[in-house]
Every structure is written in structure tokens, then in C-alpha cells.
Image (cartoon, rainbow, N blue to C red; front, side, top):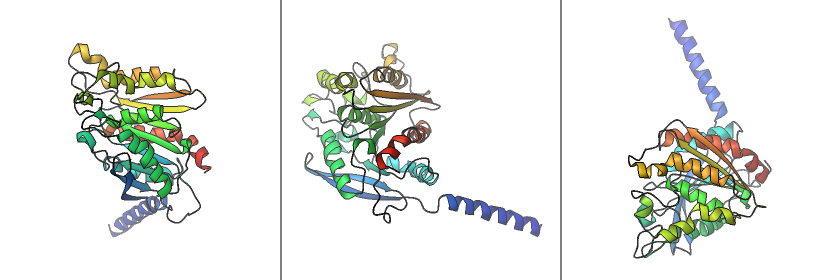
Amino acid sequence: MRRAFGIALLLLMASMHGAAAELPHGGQVRTASAPSPALGEDVRYTVYLPRGYDHDKARRFPVLYLLHGRGDTMTAWTRVKPELDRMIARREIPPVLAVLPDAPWSSRGNYYVDSAHTGGRPVETALTRDLVSHVDGAYRTVQQRDGRLIGGYSMGGAGALRYALAHQGTFGSAVVLSPAVYTPLPPADSSAREFGAYGSGDRLFDEQVYRRLNYPALLPLLRKDIPTRLYIAVGDDEWPNPDPAEARHDIDFESAALYNAARRGPGVTAELRIGNGGHDWKVWTPAFEDSLRHFAPNLRAACGC
């Protein structure tokens, strides 16, 4: 019995040693803030720094900008830290920084756009101009588009898609998870109509504003000589709208429509993945990992690592 216990203990210690050898130390997660002239206030964010960042002073790192969903905060994406640690340790991806901005404006339903609503804020300018500029100045980043990936889920997926299309010179790749995007207009019960993100003046929702900011208006404007890479993923158990007239706005349906439209856009390459799950991290975590494997060659080329 004692001998069996000893063998079991040795096996346990060996397995723990193997795990420690693979992940001797993970990355660091810190909170910080970036001044935003557009907002007249700071943008708070969480930043993931890979293992060795503080010691390898000559190295520059690609950056993942990850946008949270409606009602969530900058801490939402910290749940993928174990995946980043593991993928970097296994050399599936190069060491990267991840910047997770907080977006509290418009009751956390700002859809990451510059709002023309009376109570709206220039969120898009704050993040794509002010935050990116701050990050490039504060950290050792790869300061070119192929070294920046924009990603998000739900409302954040809508933001990531828009930023990739409207800011080709800033972001080279986008991870678009269960995006809250709708064509031609959002359904009657969508939060896109509620918080003023797509409003104007005193109106919370303006159809013309939505159409102007939505992806069908952006795709024809893309430059063919600047490659835009999209990875779109959605679950097969997304919530089905019980109203048959609104069923075409189910996010799984809309994601497939987005994929089919985007892959025909100038200079766009697009991937579509259907995962097992709903509008949740059961879909988003494995899709995020798969997207990083997909974009790893681009990130490596950008940093030369």
C-alpha cells in the first residue's frame, strides 16, 4: 500500500513538473488608462503582457485589441489568459500583447461607434486613434497594421468588424465572434436601437446613420491593394427569434450573410466557423484559439519572430 502510494505521488509530481515545464510562468495582466482627446477623459483598459516582456527589451510584439460585448467590462476577455499563456508557451503563436479596453459609454451599449446622439460619445475615434497611439507609445509594439489584430464578441464583434473595414490602415486582421450585425436594419428588439449608438440628436435610433455605419456601406469602399482578413465564428444554438418576420436577423443567419458578402469585398479574405454552442464562451473561447492559429503566420511575419 505504502509503495503504491509512493508511486502515485511520484507520478503526480512528474505530471506537475511537466505542466510547470510547459508553463513555467504565465503572462501578466495589468490595468492602465490612456488619455483620449476625443473623449476628454481617459480610456481604461486591461493589458496582457506575455512572459519575458519586461526582460527582452529589444523585442517588439504584435497587439490583439479585444472588445467586450454589451453590458460587459474590460475584465471579460481576461478569461482567455490561460489560452494565451498556453499557445505562446507551445509556440503556436508568437508572444503578443492583448489590450482590453473598457467601453462604459451609452450605458455600455455604444457599439464602438462615434455616436451623433445627444448623449453619445466618439468611441470609435477614442479607440482607433487615441488608444492605439497610446499603446504604441507606452509598449514595445509592432507599429504597423499587420501587427494589430482587432477582435470582439457580440457588440464587440460588430465593433471589430467595423474597425477592420473602416480603418484598413490600422488593423490587418479581425476576429468577429457572434457579431451583433444586421442587414439592412436591426430587428425591433435589438439593443442597437436602444442606447443611442446609432442615433442622431434626440433620436435614439436613426436608420440613415445605421445604414451609413454598417458593413454593406463599407465593403465597396475597401482598397483592393490592402488585404483585410476576417475570421467569423458563431454558435449553432444562437437564440432563435420566435417572430418569423425577424428570423432572418438571428445572429447565425446574419453571420452567414456577413461571410458571403465580405468574401466578395475588394481585398478581403474571410473564414466562417460554426461552433457547438450558443451566444457564449463555449463558442467564443475555442473560436478565439482557432482564429489565433489561423492568423499566426501573419503575426509572425509582422514581428519577424
